[in-house]
Structures are given as structure tokens and as C-alpha cells.
Length: 328
Image (cartoon, rainbow, N blue to C red; front, side, top):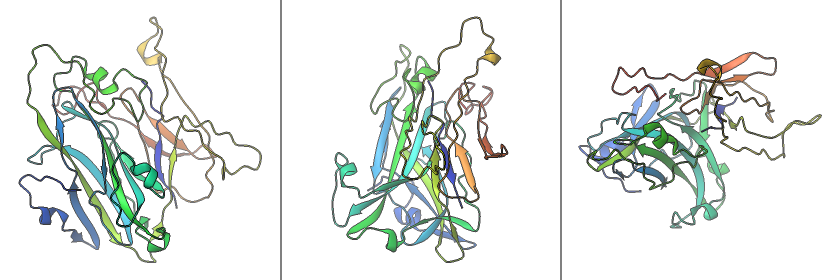
């Protein structure tokens, strides 16, 4: 299984709650000028070995002209406790901003055709490399600017959550990979992993808890531009090319050939590289690579060869309940 190792880089409906009050959850908290809210998706039901890949449209999200400073997410159970990775593997989550016609009620089946445009704002996964998505001062991700919202539309937010219940799975690693080619769409919604014969476990409802931090927009904030870089991109730079107007063919995923049987484990490493040009210059203020099990790291270099930032995964040693040997 291989992943495209995309880099997330910043350059210069009704929910069920448990033991929590809705108003308390939605009421932002302010500290040193920064607002913060803990929000939840509606629940997904999990049985042993089940797969959930859900799209939550029009989720609760801060409104108005603001600068996003942080977004973090985790899977929790009904009492609100985080679920360990060895029970539920969080393959990925993606936050998307989209514009929908005002007053329109759009079903999930035809939602994509009704959007004016959409932007991936933040993406990540809990089961791999999970650094905080904090945008440092004086920078911020600008959203809610009325001047940028198309006439007749309103800004809304979508959250895609892909989680896999590995309890009782006969092959936990195979369950999280589905033994497919990997990537964003592996392990489809409502698929089922093969279970150990006789293994028993209760059905349960799980939620995605996401914490958003933001500040009101003002002229002192420097807006960042988000770029998603993909190591599988087949774009080639030509003379005097800046990459503007040229379509980038990003595969998101790729297959890794198995090692030969006589090869030493430490010499069996697949390496991918790609060289890309950004349409504008500026400082990289945040960057992180998206990796899955088997990944040993990803590094972003400048044109002069200097290291801008690196994402190095950490694997558990099997000594702590939440940290398995085969989970990053």
C-alpha cells in the first residue's frame, strides 16, 4: 500500500451529545483574544471490524470574517473519552469550505454538483503523524470574507471522516489498509474486515470532536495561502514556467512493490521525489506530510537544497495500550 504523501502547507447538522449541554459546547471561549470552540459531528455506529467513511455537510463552524488559528480533531465515544488507535484507526479527516446557494437544501447525493467551488482548508489523520495545526502569529487562514463569497451563495463547511474499527479483526494491519492500493478512497464506507472466529464485542456510537481556534479578522493579520503538494504529481517545469494555468496531475496514491525475499529489512526502502514550483513567493509558516503505516518520513526542501521542514513518524513499541507496534 502506498500513499501520495501530500503536504498540507500554509504559505505567506443536528448532533447527539452525551453528558454535555449543546449551548455549552457551541458557546466559544475567549482567552488572550483567541476564541475556541469544541464541536462534534453526528454519531456513526461501529460494529467489530466495520468501516465508516462519512461526509458531514454544513457542520457547526465559526462564522463571520475571521482568521483560523488552529484545528484539531479526534474520535471519541459517547461519554466523550478519546478512543485508542488500536480499537479505531482514524485513516484521515478533511475539512472543506464550500459555497452553497442561499436557502437551498441539498442532499449529499448531489451536493458536489451544487457547489460553486470548494477548498480543502485542513487535513490530517490521528493514526500517523499528528502535530498540532497551529498557525503562528501574525498569520491566519482567512475565511468568511463577504467580498469573496459569490453573490447568492453562503459559506459552509464539510468534514470527511474515515475511521476503521479494528476490534476483533483477524489482520489488523490488513484491515486498516484493506489490502488495496491505498489512498484517500481505500476501505469504502460500510466495508467489513474479517473477524477472529468467536470474538465478541459491543456495537457502539462514536463521534468526531473537533476543536477550532480563531480570532476576528483585522489588518494586522497576514493571510496565508494553502498549497497541497503531492509526491505523485506528474507536472514538469518547462523553461520560464511558473506552473500557473497548468494542470497538476496528482494521483494521491501509489503502489509500492514488495521487497525481494533475500533483501535485508533495513535496505528495503521506497523513495519518491518531486520538484514543483509555486506561483508566488513567500515564507512557509506551517507544513506537514500525510503518511500511513510503513512511512519513514517526508521532507520539504527549498530550491537551494535546505531543509524547510520534516515530518518524521513515531511508531509505538507495543508497551502502551494506545501505542501498537504496527501503528504510527
